[in-house]
Length: 623
Image 1 (cartoon, rainbow, N blue to C red):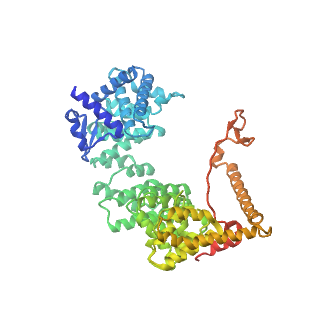
Image 2: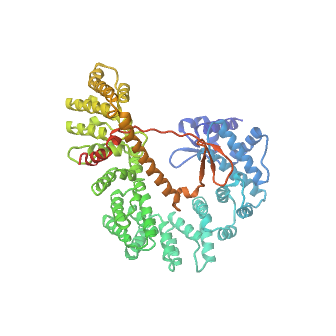
Image 3: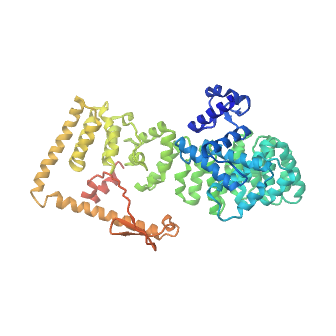
């Protein structure tokens, strides 16, 4: 009774926290469950629920009865529907959606335990799985049956002959993901069984070595059975590609293995099968047996691989570099330049810095590209890496951005492009960290000359009201006064009123800025009296021209995307707009009401008052 109560409390706790790990402070509440092994200690010192025990399975079967007034039967399809119904009910009770987390682990284990019960009853789950794969229409609740099945197979009591037959008939490429997980699991959980299975398969296949046997031998070598390395090599003498793939699976946990693989790579002068070779080199340089001399030799190999004439191989190889080699950022960055020289495919930059920790490489690359033909759309290449470093290394990223705001460098509006890159709100850098008066003044000029989103940038700019340099505050007043007069008028005063805390300092600071608004209003009245000077007749025409050109360019861009056979829009049907507020698909009769999406951006009015002059000034600014 005490155990059942603790089990109920445990799953309330798990469903609330959405985590099967048990905090050591919580553990004392479940002493009976720990005694029974229902809660087990992990190697890292944490505690976790063993979801595959009969007690857990029995508890969830009772939950089916109590909450659904139902029960599980020998019909797999119906029982999976029932389990799914319970899962959805629990998620609703605890106000949680369809996200992979503890709920998924718990109910997947429930399904596995159910299959184990059927297996004990004599129901052939393997045959059911094979029959299911032949069906075209499978119910939603069985969509992940393959994943569940392979977990079940690890726990099932099965003979060597039976599993050998199963492996032979289920080794298609499409099913290898879960099959490989299964092979790894039986090596970890059933080592003696795995050794017997390997020997059985070696005897069965005298002149070949199927995929699953390579995985088994590689994983048993990783468990310390180095004597199997020779068996692996013997079977792979006729296939370089298979051999390299097998060697890429090996952990370099032995000097014997290290020397063997190092010798193979160094003595190989071809530039084929780069994906596997690159993975082997990563394992070698991460090995404790690697020396600085070996590292240089292996690094040279990576650069030699760019000589491969096949672009697909080069791209596959470089993809391995991008998402691996985490401890070797210097080498990775050098390889990026090698790749760009080889392919000119600059779009890889957006994903290349995915697992970098040091932002200096990104800013060096921005500098290189800036000095070799930068244009304002270039910043789009760097949106993802900049966002990555702003999230993971904010202080260093801010330092690099601030270093670009310097009278010693000619970086145009690059720093402002960076802080605005791909974001609804700019990176909140602190301009007060700029050490010199000249650099703070330059920062003011950069932001006040940036062509859009001034409403987003002004909170960053206004911090300079606290500058220790009187000339900086004076420059800030002058620039804001100019923008009030020429661009943003009374709306800028509103922004400033909301941003600056009420004080004498605020009143003093805003006085000349507000005077510029009065001057603007006086001149506006004079202009309205004369048609030749009236902004309604003059500036409106410029604005209309600006928007008509923008709409024309956007229409051309959309038409180009629509007509591209490889474009995303080629996947979708055409739509027609009906009477301005409805739409329908091509060749369909249903008419639906249009939704409404709005966005706004404040732009500098100087853009359309004198576009050519403004563009010229932007291009020449601080260069």
